[in-house]
Length: 135
Image (cartoon, rainbow, N blue to C red; front, side, top):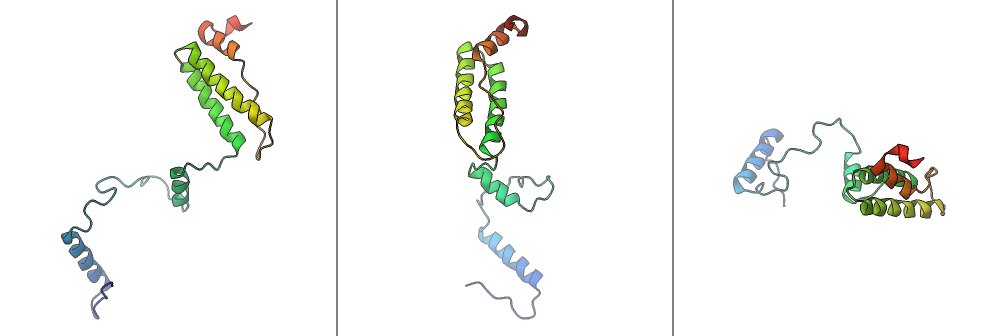
């Protein structure tokens, strides 16, 4: 049971004593995050910070599937442009095209996808030979 504040003692001094005694007993040793900076302490206050952190830790997205795929398409195109081999470029774009075709063939909530499958051969030609060779 928690010790009660003695009558006549101020709350501040009583709490300070409780903390000091707990520290001396080592009850604060080895706490997770000890000695590390407080995450996001320099960011503006957001009253929903804990909700956002929980969603991120659970890998939950609030984006509609179409917007999530648009973002994935942008990231995939960047990765394809920096890929070292034609095989890797084709793997990336064919995987993306499969997802685009599946989403275009189904009814999904949110805004429209507004993406069509990419021309893999054209992308490969432009990557290694430049845009003028695709004409």
